[in-house]
Image 1 (cartoon, rainbow, N blue to C red):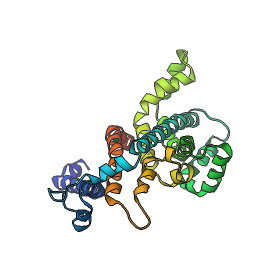
Image 2 (tube, rainbow, N blue to C red; image 1 turned 60 degrees about the vertical axis):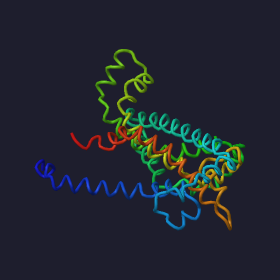
Image 3 (spheres, rainbow, N blue to C red; image 1 turned 90 degrees about the vertical axis):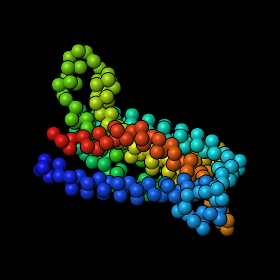
Image 4 (cartoon, rainbow, N blue to C red; image 1 turned 180 degrees about the horizontal axis):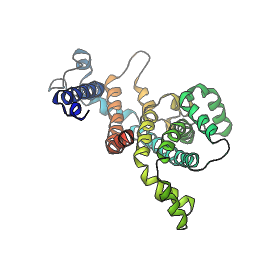
Length: 279
């Protein structure tokens, strides 16, 4: 097995496949970025060509900053994403710790019930969610989106984190109890630092769908003051005429924060995915 892994042909083949997948995954991002710096005519004439002296233009970015409240949309998206991830990680980790550490009647049934949320899309309950938000007065507020995204991300968070927390040494936790540490101290100071790769994995898996979502912002928070970046970009898409320069520029700026956060969490993400693969 080790000889097969060290075979240069296998290594070259594996890296070739990974490079090909990376090129395919990044190709749409590349097309969006290069076309955001081109004139409208150049976008349709040569969409895959790099901008040159003739085709280079920043009119899309000028339109985004002048006609749309880009910074307001960006702030709303950032608040919703960061707050949702905070609650997902906090409540998901606490629920996972309870399910993995304490044995009580209905423990397994509770875990299965939470796992159903992974298989059932939350958008099925859009009408009920909208009615609930109307009754509570949360329509056109960022809290409506934060609560929905938190509920959407909790099942996956509990499922992943509970498996990692079962691998935390019982001797370590019992030693903390013998030293007089409370359950909250054991959870925050002993357990959470050991499951950081898993938490990074949960954060990345939830961050991208939340940042890119258009469905719930359109339904729950369509007001100008609460528009997210994805919804705000739709102002440049008309029924008869679409300002593609502005759309591509807005999408290009929307991609940048996600890529930065992904690079920051990538190391922890890889550790979380590969944890347990080698004993």
